[in-house]
Image 1 (cartoon, rainbow, N blue to C red):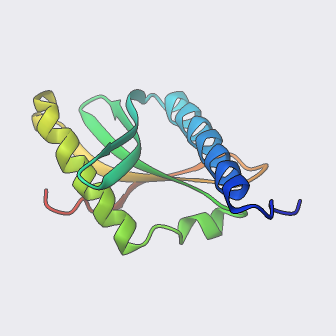
Image 2: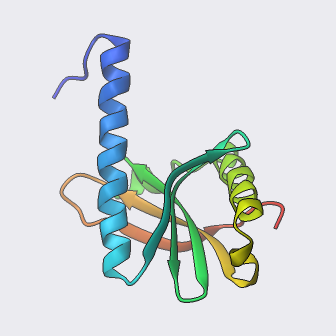
Length: 128
C-alpha cells in the first residue's frame, strides 16, 4: 500500500498506526498479568506510551511499530530513551505511591501479522 502523498494525511495515518500498536501492546501485556496505570503520558518534554504495573513492578513502556519486529527493535535511540526518562521522573514525582516499587523501562515491538514482542528492562531509566 502506497503512503499518502499529503504530509498531513501521512501524519494522521502514522498516528493511527501508533494508537493501534499501543492498544495491541497493552492487550499483550494485560494477558501477561500487567494492569494499566497510564497511556500516552506526556510531561517534561517527554512521552511514555504505556505505564503498567504487575505486583511491585512498574514498567514505563515504549511501543515501536515497524514493518518487522527486528526493525522495531532498533528504533529506540538515545534521544527517545532520554525523553522517556524525563517523563518517567515527572510521573514518579506526581505519584508518590510508586516510590517503593521496582521501576524499569520496557519495550514492546509490534509488526504486522505478528504477536507483539515484550522486552522487559529494555534500557535504563536515566536519572533514577
